[in-house]
Image (cartoon, rainbow, N blue to C red; front, side):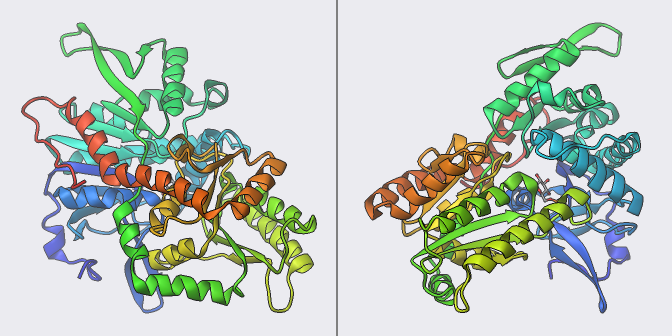
Length: 497
Ligand code: G6P
């Protein structure tokens, strides 16, 4: 049984165990869900967990994170080969550190201020306090000279706090979201503290080369340190008060997916049958377009709906022939900007459906749910055109999931140049989502594209995604990090590629 329902004394007695490999992320790979009949552990949302699970199963590692529920203490426990260390957050910390500073300050700021970031000193204080709690927990489960890998924007102070507590550790950090240009980053009242926090790591990973460049520029401008290529020189003093330089590597490591897992599902006859059934249930339209996103303002869902609506209005697409399926999974629903976005999207969908749906056929099939991976792969197989129109996105794993699922070498990916994936997926139809006319033309190019061209593009995309899968991402990061370890430190096992 993977998750213990009752966490008993046998588990807590092992609480002093230490590990050579520790992952620290805001969320644990499992969320605690309370139901009428008691509590249960469920796999938590987000690509991060999927990305790190294979690394954890290759290493007897520990994972420090929040179980997704406020004001509850849980003992550490074992799940799927990893030792999970739950961190308690109070209701107020969820509001200030998670919903506030992480998702209403850093998230909009790092995504090029698509939404206005809020700056509140109380939120910052909570961010510092919670980061310290994560650092202390990581320090207590890390063995002598262990490797600790800290994840994402919610925990940018952890590397320096951890180094302060344990200078024997090798510390990696990976930022899953963009790092903005200095002109934007410099708005942050705590810009210095965040950069100093990150520089506690030995290796700082970003999605795109441009993100690493933006970070290096911030280091030069704010701290005046030398940052050339991927090497940043951090001046320090040793125990005897002598000046020395510590080297930090900052470079890009584009994240990916478990491509073979998606291929396997896409080759499953049951999933293929489900794909045919989906098309049939949609009324066997000529063209199925698909959008799959967390309901987030960075994803450009409104831009996509607008383009589709205009194509219907102009008669370039007919409501009888075309359907847009939009899966918008619920996200951060207590943050006001997300509530407003939901209202805006649902209003736009309602208008277009009111104008163009018929009794037997909907123009837009809008689904405010999350689905299991099998159902997603069936949807990918059913979709002629995948629309990824993010206004800003660290990577966008959905684009890669679509490509990995198209084992039939068919389907067209329309991809925003503002998603990290655009650096790699060059055979997609690349678009600027702000240019609605350009987006509309790309959609028409996609629906009219001859089968031979579709196959040629999809083959090139598939080569990239299959060769550069998530195992390669984590192995590359851990190899670069491993090279910074002292010779006598325990090595971290890489995963099978
Ligand atoms: C993005 C972030 C992750 C986050 C995920 C889901 O992918 O990079 O750190 O976990 O969104 O968001 P949530 O706020 O629900 O954890």
